[in-house]
Length: 365
Ligand SMILES: Cc1ncc(COP(=O)(O)O)c(C=O)c1O
Image (cartoon, rainbow, N blue to C red; front, side):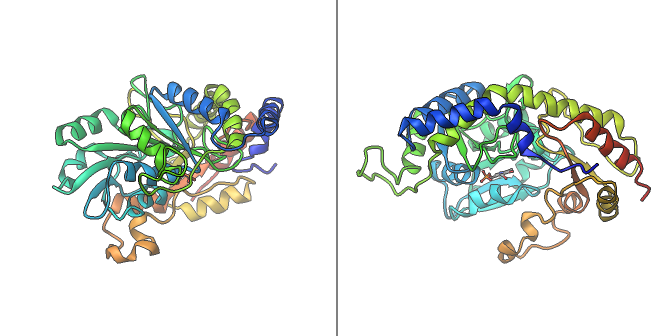
């Protein structure tokens, strides 16, 4: 049997009637941008995370770019993020002309609070923790450091819809939290989408203007903005996804528990969950020193696996002008060399989970 890395159609089939009713409702409304469906998902998703305002945008990438811009961060400013971040997190900073300052992650793949203070300079304006793979960074410590130094926090929540830290949702610890609704995410649209969340009325107003050419009143452009809006069809689809998010996260957690108890291969290191955190397993990320051989073995066993991410930002050709190279962030480079993501998603059947476990356990190096 072939085990796909992800099969979005399976989740679609589970909630097909609801998705189709929602899409038809949006189509038949005759109103396709900035309408009732958007208002509803902005209200419901921000309430779910525990934030006052939600501002729907085109993508998680746009949420990040506009969050940095809304906070007035630009050339001459520094934003601290983790060196194993996905490229979009770093692009959110550099697209505004600000400088990313990278720090190595901790053993949970999150921003390491122990390394944070040493990276703060008089130019630092914000900290941008990336809740990679579905587990939040150590937000209580990061929050305390941000408060001590008067820094903003921008959370990259693209992979962690519903994850918690001591009962509090990831995305509720920041000045602005940025979510992606890319289809594979724990809460995914059937196309691109994203949302910025904030508790601050002024920041919410600014974000709304930034996504709408810089205007609050049509054709009155107070600031320079862009066009980045979550459309009505995707907003309607997300309403269905939000209703089932906890159930989908529970299935991911169930699959993760099967992997964690079933995989017993000493060549493969399993992901750790920090005390007090709930992990929503956007990805089940294992580490293996002989990654190429493991990937080949999994393929031979019919299991599709992926790598997130093979090239860290500091080694990406687009940032060659930083002058950084191999050896500058050894832990990040190790993760980039050893990480393997196993299939995990709503609708994945138990027999496929067992096939993955058997395939990993039969890897002999
Ligand atoms: C950590 C992280 N940040 C940002 C993004 C960007 O989101 P989008 O694909 O919606 O632009 C992603 C999506 O892949 C992501 O995984």
